[in-house]
Length: 329
Image 1 (tube, rainbow, N blue to C red):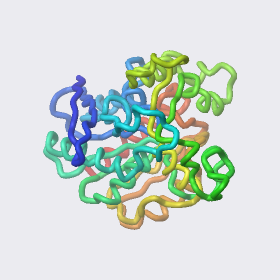
Image 2: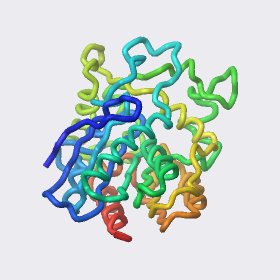
Image 3: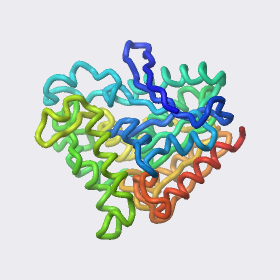
C-alpha cells in the first residue's frame, strides 16, 4: 500500500513523502528513510522491481515506512536558484536546511502514528543528516540507522577530500565552492560508475540484478522534469551535500554525536567508497548518551548493498536493520 503526499516546512517548502505499509495498523515503530547526496527517495528506496525496495521489505516486517525527498531533490520544492545556471552561486541545500525538511516529516509521522519517537535510517549523506537531526532532537528519535555515512573520522579521503576536485586550490583545506556551483548534473552512467568499480567481478549482474540497476537509473532521471531536455539526459541535485561531505572527509564532525539519545546501529559496507572504518569507529566512540550502540561491517558489501543481490550482502543488511529496529520496543 502506497500513498504519496506533501508536508510543509517551517520556511515554506513542500516536502514529498511516500508512505509504504504492508497492511493497516503496523505494529512496529514508523521508519523514515532519508536518501543521500544525489538520488532522491524513491530511486534510492522504493524501486518497482524485485529486490529494489527497502521500503517494501521494512513494511512487510511490520513498519509503516516513509520515504522523503529533501528540498531540491525529486518531487520536493526546489530552490529558485536551481532554475538558473549553477555557476557563480553558492552550493544549495546545506545540512542545516535539511533539518527543517526532516523535522516536518517527523512531525507528520509522529501525529499519524500516535507516537512520540520515530526511527530514522539515512544512507551516506542521509546518514549524516539523520545523525544531526537525532543530535538536535534527542526526544524525537528512538532508533537511528547510520548507513555508510561519513563522520569526520579521518582527514584523508581519496574520492572526496584533500587533493581532489572538491578542494579549493587557492585556499587549501576549503571546499571548492566556485567549482561546485549551486547544483550539479548526473547521467545514468554517472550513477553506476562508482558502484561498478567496487564490484570485484567483470559481470556486474552476478552482484546486482540488472533490473535493479536499470530501475535505479530510470527513477533517478524521472525525479527531474528537466532531465530529458538535456543530451544525454541528466538530473539535478544541490551541491550543498558535497560541501558538507568534503568537510567530513577532511576530519571535521558537523554535529556532536554525544547529544544522541537513541539506540544507534552504525552499519557499514566493507567495500564502501564513501564512509571509512574510522568514521564508524569515531562515531561509536562519541555516542556517549545513546541508549545502545551497535557497530556492524557487512563483509564484501558495496555502498549500494541494500540494492545488491541477497547473497551479496542484502540479506545480511536487511536482517541487521529489521533486528535492530525490533530492539527496545
